[in-house]
Length: 518
Ligand code: C2O
Ligand code: CU
Image 1 (cartoon, protein in one colour):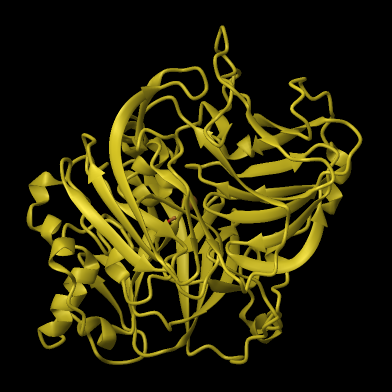
Image 2: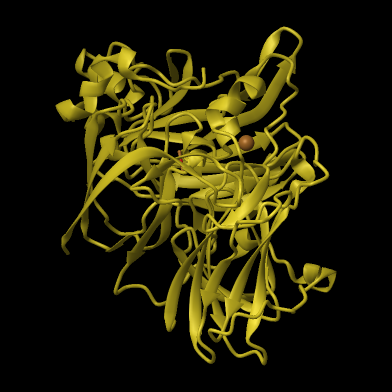
């Protein structure tokens, strides 16, 4: 293991990734942000200087942060954001995980303005092998700064109208559909003939789910959110915001170049503008020949072969020994919209707004002060800091979470600090009498799961990682509208922590925090 040092500057630039000039907030002038690549066991030290107008904070999506909860970078939960003109050092060790991850800002919706990038962890324990290894980030894209889109979205009576993307990009590249002349470029992947290539897909977008395929190539799915799975052949897969899928492509087809197609699932958009092209193209070529591909998509014929990737099998297989959870937490998620209230997202009756003092810091102080703000009764006293939903779970427990979605959109739910098992999913109401029949033989583990419109998902995790952890919808607009709750796991351990002064330091000056949505 070694220590890897990065020195990053966040700034605002004017750039035209798809041909339309706009302001982006970027790391070291790059869009998307630089690749972080390490081995399991390495310590990552990233010094971040915030040279932008607004505050910011970086979160390492999917990292366990075991013992370094305050490096999770989640505004209002574990950290106060880095004010403009200030620096912060993120430092943590990557343990017991490898595969495809990413990082992004966790301050309001600013991540979608350019503050994201890939985070790849290698390990000798990994059994996936290929001749080459590439990152393919797909994402929806707006021509405006997210802060400019927020006021209208959060205004009263706006009927849950998420801003509709202006287009989509692959690795920050694409061609605007309405631009004359078109200045953008397509992402191009030179993949040598007869070799095997690992493509690590990450949906780094704000809102849209994507269908992804590569003309004429069957792909072999080998990794889901940092978890190795039994290879599965597919032609097309659907990837939701924050999810990762690695596929192996064998470059064994007759011609030289092929389209890579990533299509936004646009039917959940409030309206589909006429000039919106939901599909972004990339190019896969075996040779340096510059000719455009002439290949055709797989078409509807392959739709039947779409499998639910939540049923992927982990290798090596693990079955869950504890059949009964210690507790079942029920969460009803929905948007409540009415003439007299803001359109906000709710988990049960709570709608999150970031606390000025992160709940982690509040928890440490509260616990230190003779447990004052905490009830010590029962296994799972749900309690409330600033009217936020925070579940406290003492000790190491097996917790099932049943989420019911009372909403016509689907939501990619993400739990910080853990991976969870996906025990079951469905539409309508979950029938509790079927509890015992849930899949406990080698269910998939992942960190971001889609909950379909009017559907439910039952997930399980074991609280073996102490801390204050966010659980939220990863659609940037929805989290900002309040679809976030928290788990405080192993509070006795948390109470013994001293959070480093520089972590708390920014919280002492809330007037320095700029740029929140609300
Ligand atoms: Cu990808 Cu709360 O994070
Ligand atoms: Cu959502």
